[in-house]
Length: 227
Image (cartoon, rainbow, N blue to C red; front, side, top):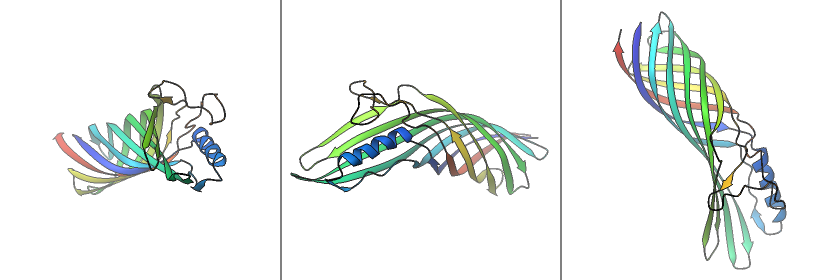
């Protein structure tokens, strides 16, 4: 039995469903179709970074098991452009998804160079920030929004780990599916809710209505603590 700990960092992609936000964007494009030179694209694919720590890992016979914590921030930014009477203008929607997670993982230790992760289950706390930025010839204005409180979700994943310098350095690739949602978004300055669209005062309740597939590649640095 081998016991170790360590830290890791990596880069990846997260897909998600944003029915409420994309409906808002569809209405935005429709109301400005005569002036827009580029429509706002829909949201659903974010990229970004993950950092974390392996609190502990045990290797018992051929099964590697452990507990880890992580923090990831994923971004997606889209823009629309328009020709106005005073010149060209650009609107940007800058979305950031922030996730804290704690979970357990189980791997089959194939050799000193490889292991196959067959289960990585993580409990997550999810938040979102949105910046609505309007860039005009004479000025730039911003509105900042965020969800009122963290939303609990979870993710399941599997993957492969390669050890170029076992057991200290390893490269890990993982693929999985996340389950989370963000119902409401609040304006930072007024505390008001984001509406279903510009034509109604009804608050949006399905800003992000589901998670999706994700993939990460990360570098792990381990410190053996004993046998």
